[in-house]
Length: 478
Image 1 (cartoon, rainbow, N blue to C red):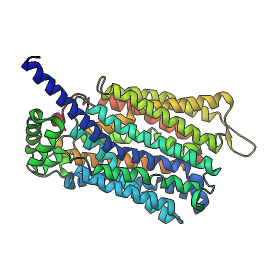
Image 2 (tube, rainbow, N blue to C red):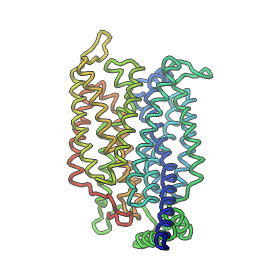
Image 3 (cartoon, rainbow, N blue to C red):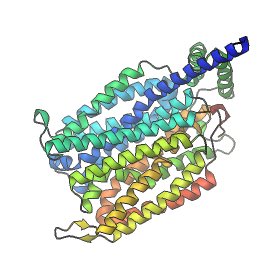
Image 4 (cartoon, rainbow, N blue to C red):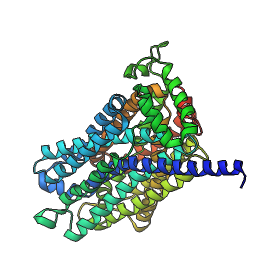
């Protein structure tokens, strides 16, 4: 082997080692996404337990389920700014402690107020992790595979949901029902919350092993630390060039990042890129995906399935979601973000419409519960799960990927704060209104509204969303 080949071989080995390190670091950050999913999905199997323990009305139950989302909105809005002040890794560390406290508190709650407080604390952690994990991944990964690594965040979210559904099903089966007594004389629904303590502790410990974002370190003028991290991630040959590019992009603005940077100084209006971020965040929720995740057991029981079968359907939906996200890992850096979004919107519009039609055909049985005919039951179940697949090959992962990468360095934290708050506020509104829509206009009417949102989102993507595939973060314009 000649000297040139030897050098190329050494560089190739070093590049492979650097890539493995970035993947491992990104996987640690995505545990925040796993907890995001677990905390969001665990509520699905506890609804009967909450009603029994707290004697909740429909409105009260809706608030107990959705209360976490108020914390999510606050966490997402605050995390962007805190990430600019304290660092991405530090905010994730704080969120890991909050996840643990929420898991324990929700399970031990004996009154609704304590439960709501615990869920809001967990919500703050979910909101913070939802914006900081993709931002951290985007800031340590190169443009070549940034989309794939950021998509792992959505796989982690869906894996968290899947594990929550599986845990709920297993615990309810072991106790005979979610309200049945399990270990230590405690009901199964309480153990459903306590299970989240395990990944919370793991997240906390692993976060202690990863470095801070190099872009945050440059912004804080900790340039020696930033260069050291970049050398660790990319090797000495590439690190200096990346450091200089980051430094130049931040040097164009000589002040520290702040919320007012989102306003265009010339026009005095919010930057267009911020409106696009808000639109992406809002439409992801207006299509109703979290009704399936939060109320799946209630929804399927409402059309005649038993609690056990409804929980098992949730497990099926979670498994399909993971598979769909894995497909996106292979597509997002090949065909781009925008095509996946509009294809997903079109698919969701069709499948949501079929679900609405199926539910519109439901009749009342002798006990006053909705019942679907054999054919329409199959249509509803198939269409709902295909809808979940379309969501998870498109809006599920792609929205988070784009929010983590689409904003220029100077406004990334602030842009994520506003878009993240919009996402969780929309999530809260959709979740808290579903029980009222269920009793007001019925399942068919509710799903008709979600269908309309999916149709409108097609136009939004085609008209306003710009492709970010292959661009370095320093090339993003706002």
